[in-house]
Image: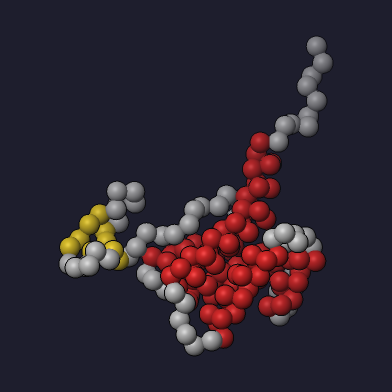
Amino acid sequence: MRWVRCPSCGRASAVNEINVVSPAAKFGHDVQGLPETVAQAYDEARRCTEVNAHTACEMMCRKILMHIAVDKGAKDDLTFAGYVDYLQDNHYVTPSMKPWVDVIRKHGNIAVHDLPHTDRDRAIGTLTFTEHLLRNVYEMEHLAKQFAPSTTPAPSP
């Protein structure tokens, strides 16, 4: 066992005899414009990948669907299916997004309701789809506000 320091964040990690780093790097990328509750849930899902908690990662991705729905106006007492329907009915999930958002839902359901643990590849796939959903729902709107031309007319000479 040897100790190393991450050149990006400065945190210490251990490397075992077969070169497995623990904790591993947090998977995924930051997403701009997230409300606090969604940001916390997304960060938790990403931190799960650091410690190989792949089932927990998928459970958090499932929960993120619920957080998005409530943030966008759904009542906070719906069933999980109700939250997913809300996102679709209110066009936060478009028809072209539905197949990969369904992957988040299905993998999250397996993580919550079935006994076998989730492997790393499936969790990373689920987290990747979740990141892209967050980019579509939040980051693009955030960037549009940031870079949209001003609607204030220029003063006349």
